[in-house]
Image (tube, rainbow, N blue to C red; front, side, top):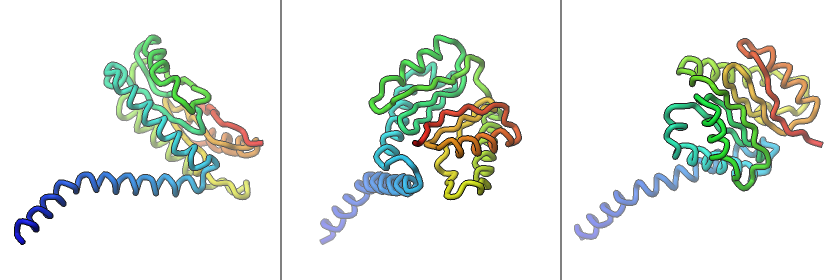
Amino acid sequence: MKTASAFLLAALVLAAPALSGCAAVLVGGAAAGAGAAHDRRSTRTVFVDRNIQLSAYDDLNKDKELALRNNVSIVVYNGVMLLVGEVRSEELRQRAERIVAGFDGVRRLVNEIEVREPEGFWSRRRDNTITAHVKTALLDLTSLPGFDPSRINVTTAHRTVYLMGLVDDEEDEAVSGITRNVAGVERVVKVFEYRD
């Protein structure tokens, strides 16, 4: 009896890491599904975009010079891939684009990487704060009935705010106007796609 109990305990201990990984996948999948409920993209497109983004980061991280000595961020929304950040040379900028180009499901690649010295922690933190302020400001957009600010992807690099999402002309105008008026924003780049 003790042998069977010891065997069962050992099996559970060995299986725990695998089971916790399954739980993480299930919880992550459920969270992604919950986020997809408000999204104008299909659930499948949301998952495809996330998989492309993770795969692109994986490929980019294999290039140690790009991954460790430069700063490149990747956002994928509805098959549009946005690259932002900074690299030390034009060759590295082009290399980053080459590495992430060609994924099935990417319809357009927008390379906004700047050639300059990578910014430090405080500059990136400032950009993250601007992103948070833009997202908060969009919560106050009440002039558009049924508008859901969670449908807008906001990314900031070098005080430039990149807006992605499926919008109509009225939403574009309202979202862009609010974003331009957020403290610290120097420029707004619209990477929107337009609904009919």
